[in-house]
Every structure is written in structure tokens, then in C-alpha cells.
Image (cartoon, rainbow, N blue to C red; front, side):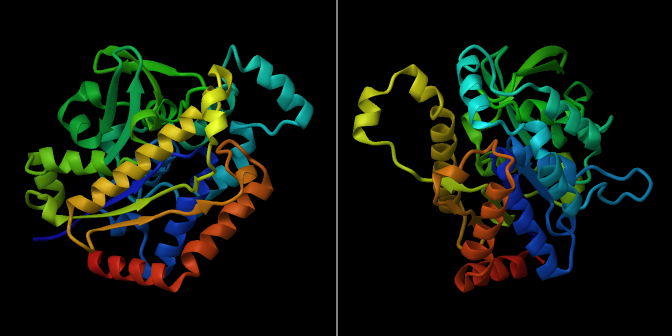
Length: 335
């Protein structure tokens, strides 16, 4: 049975430079483009933005509309448009204002999205994708899926709307509303419940791997024994909250930390569950540890933070012989 290869990318704001750098290394190793190595992509928040843009199709050539290098520039050149850098005094003033509103306006995010995305629709993706959001209107998780869009036109959302909804991180950016399946969806960052979308991708194939859609994509029905997943993180900061902090903190202190705690915890849980579900060699997780708190803010558009993250990718992953051996073995098994 032919293998079904899934690429899964976590949320993490501007730390999206981490998975992009890993994917660039994979293209260099294999001599193939990412869309040639995988059959499906899943993403949350910045990961959802990456997989959505990676699978935008050039209507003339049928090839990907953007290269990894072009998507990397979206972060390196436009990160400050999405999350403007403030002075220390400005940051202090904004902290007071942020008690009553999101930290950043949606204007920057929407401006950048419109630079890369026009009227593309979900069912026209180069590969099947799965992107997450959480709908405040119904208090339910939502999965934007190419399969469902192909079967139901009301689920065939605009890629722009999907990217805007999946990246609306609470406290950072405003929620985003649009019409989906004939009703108003008010979406926030899918990372509030599934920052690592690997299990969502597993569930999709477990439930619908025998559907006509996946049979047409894959040539036959898909079972979990056919599935190989590369799961990419965006960096994890493991600074601890002290016992004193946990006892004395009130709403103001917790609100600035709770999103990161939830996203980190969910990602770790999914990593454990995914590794238990399939046989050795079918699942590989690559991520970096962010060792210094000053580089952990996922909205930090500074050159110093970007350079730190990229350097850690080199040191912790690409220059580690054991990790590269695991990656080489995984890549060999899916080609």
C-alpha cells in the first residue's frame, strides 16, 4: 500500500520562521519541493497560514504559487507590519490599553494577507489541507478541510478568511467573522484547543480515509498504517512559573501567560498521543527549545529574536547528527 504523507505545523506567530527553515533544509536534502514530498498538510495559526500559502496554486502552471523563500520573506520583511515593534515606553503605555482591547490592530495582519492571498478557495488547494479555528458563535472547534470543501460548496471558504480566522490569537489580535456553511463564524486562533494539529490530521484520515475524495487523491483508501507524519513546532519556551507566582497571581498576571501555557501543553500532549498511535518510523517531531525568555514572544518582530530562532534551528536540529539521522531516515521512507 502506498504511503500517505502528512506535514503538520504548529501555531506560534512570527516563530513560523522555525518550520520554514526546517522545510528549506528538507528541500535542499531531497532536491524536491515540499508539495512533492507530502500528500496532505495541516496547520494551526501561523502553521495554518504556512500550509495554506504553500498549497496556493498558480492557475497557469499548476505549480505552487509561492516558494519557501518567498514565504520566509513574509515573516522577515512583513513581521513588523503585523506586530509593530514598540519602544519600552510605548510598550508600558500599551499594556494599560491592552486590558480593554487586543494588543495589536488587525490592520497589519490583513494588509500582509492581502499581499499574498486574493480570491483563492479551499477546494482549489494544490494538496488537501486542514486548518483550525475556534468558533465563538457556537463555542465549537472548526476544521477547514479541503475534502469537505470539495463535497460541500458552503464549506468552500476563501483562503484569506481561513488564514485570518486561524491566526486571531486571543489578547493579540481581534476575532474575525465571516460566513461559513451559511452561518456567521467568529473565529479565534485554533491554538486555543489544538496548537499542534497532528491528531486532527490523524482523525481526518481515520474517519474519512475511505471516502471517495481521498480515494481519488491517493488512488486507494487510506488507513492509519499507511500514514507518515512530519510534525514541526515553532519553538517552545520552558521557563517555569514558581510556586509563589501560581499562588499570588491574579487575572492580570495569568492572562498574559495562559495562552502560551495552553498552547504548549496541548502541543506536548498531541506529540505523546501521536507517537503512541503509529509504529516507529511513521512519526517524526522536530522542534527547538527557546532557552531565553527574551526571545520567546511570538509577536516579537525584532531582528535579534529572528536571528536567535534561526541560529537555534541550526544548532539544535540541523547540526545535530542524531536528529539529522532520524530526519534522513524519515525522508528516505516517504520518497
